[in-house]
Amino acid sequence: MSTSDENNSENVKNVPVFPKQKAFNLGDVVTGNAKSLSDAEKAQLEEQNKRMVTPFQALKLEQEARKHWDLFYKRNENRFFKDRHWTTREFSELLCGGEEEEPVGNDSSTPTVKECTESENGKTLLEIGCGVGNLIFPLIEDGHRNYFIYACDLSPRAVELVRKHNLYDERYMKAFACDITSEEVFETLPEGSLDIVTLVFVLSAIHPEKFHPTVANIYRLLKPGGVVLFRDYGLYDMAQLRFKPGHKIAENFYMRQDGTRSYYFAETEVSELFRKVGFTVVVNSYIHRRTINPKENIDVPRIFVQGKFSKPEAI
Image 1 (tube, rainbow, N blue to C red):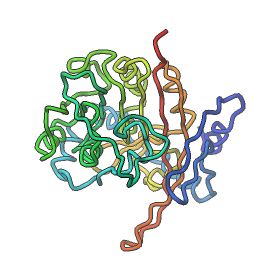
Image 2: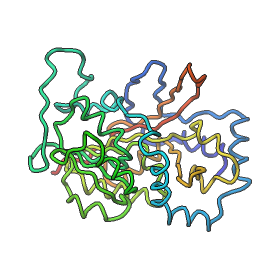
Image 3: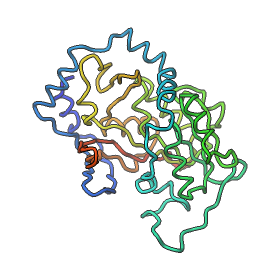
Image 4: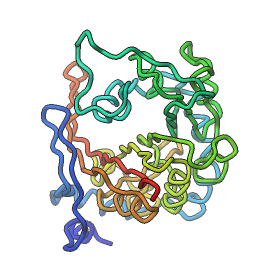
């Protein structure tokens, strides 16, 4: 499919339109429309097709996915990703006390933290692709402990780094290694046991053929009324446009230099993926944002897809 065809596919008639979330950062553009490409950007994407990853290479990358992520965390340990202190601002379901319209401010009436243990009947959260804990530990630091936290990652080395963190405490959390695309997760968690699942910059690292089984597993894990909090790379994000020939595996799917992989999602594609499994789309949007760091002279446009998907209540 050509670049122009992809653009047209994002604007086809009769595609359901879902609610959009509000913008949380000054300058954010929240939309259901894919980025319009310049002629130069179209040429960049066409250039990528001149030399593709071979089928043999692609299969090897899939077979060695765990090894590549283990090597990534061996090299970088906890120094690569920044802590995600933004999650409670953009996903209010993570706030202590449940879903709120706005994040808790500097009010002295901030609710008392209730810590949940695994044996209690409190809320349960699973972070898929926990890495070294850049989402879960900021939650704990900020006092959001009214749920028991499970955290899993494909990389055993990443899980070991989580367990070594000074805030790791198995009274209110449990980290384990598993391949979420397989049945492994059900060796640790029973079906219908979770209230919240976070899927933040994780699905893009999985082969597109495994998107459906991954989301189906999440559906099985959630309780009726449970919710998935999703953010990942959006179609025509700056990082996608920058790939050189020799890195493209398939449409919108790429190999990085270190052997890890990245997929770039259309907003409609994400909605349809979750709907086909049985989820209700609560909100789903492209977020166009500029990443600015004056000290390092960085000013780059980024595109994410962000959504919330709920498992219908039992009838």
